[in-house]
Amino acid sequence: MDRLESMTAFVAVARAGGFSAASRALGIPLATISRRVGELESALGVRLLRRSTRQVVVTEAGQRFFAACQRALEDLRDAEEAVSNEDRTPRGELTITAPIAFGRLHLQPVALEFLAAQPQINLRLQLVDRIVNIADEHIDAALRIAHLPDSRLIARTLGSIRVVVCASPAYLKARGAPQRPEDLMQHDCIAWSILGPRDTWWFQDSGREQQYPIRTRLATTLAESAVDAATAGLGLVQTTSYQASQAIGDGRLVIVLRRFECAVTPVSLVYARDRLLPLRLRAFVDFAAPRMKARLRTIATVVEAGVSG
Image 1 (cartoon, rainbow, N blue to C red):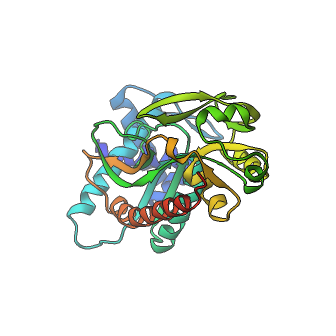
Image 2 (cartoon, rainbow, N blue to C red):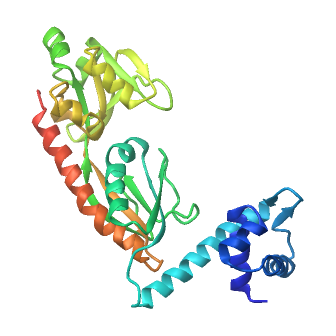
């Protein structure tokens, strides 16, 4: 049995959902596909596929093996690509992960430009508000908004973001601007968190970060919802600079309590250190990194100009 041919046949069947479709995709006779998958199952001593007259279903063991096979075949193609000078056109599939709001507002526009420039590449954006394990979930690169621990990942720093407190000019005219975090108990505040209501905000005073209580007028689970409420004049909101930058740039929100802001948080593009860097990933990093840096510089400039006190 040729293990590589058998793995290729199995992956094709799992992707296509059937032997006939896999046969057509690979241009190999149906009987050959069936024989190769059968030999693979015999060698492994486990059933990878459940066959019926209507469909083929990947078993639980088959799903685990499918993920491993995909990665092994991708690594082999990357190795071949790295030593071959015949074709230097980036091609294949990339998976990039990022936080939901930042990914939608800033990564996706850059990704669309990249796809327009690289017609041979397909891209999957995994936008989730959690730290994704690159190796376990077969991610090519991740955009992280965090202080990164030492790891086996390569990190390309793109810039930084701030957490700001802001309100509409109308609200500040009517109620005045808070001068210290303690003043927030005398103001209407808009709290947001996907984990539920929050009654404190973080600030830095005398070199130490600490929480201060707020008086919540509106609580919501989405930052966009909280920013919209603040632009409508309801009260003060604490959110990231990138989530509020458009409203700040338009003059619909003004930043307050600037000198009490916590330290900035770095934004980085990270990818595995111990893998041969595929041409398609190298192309994405080289394309996306300078554009993301420019976006973060623009956000910083806009936010810096939107300060009231």
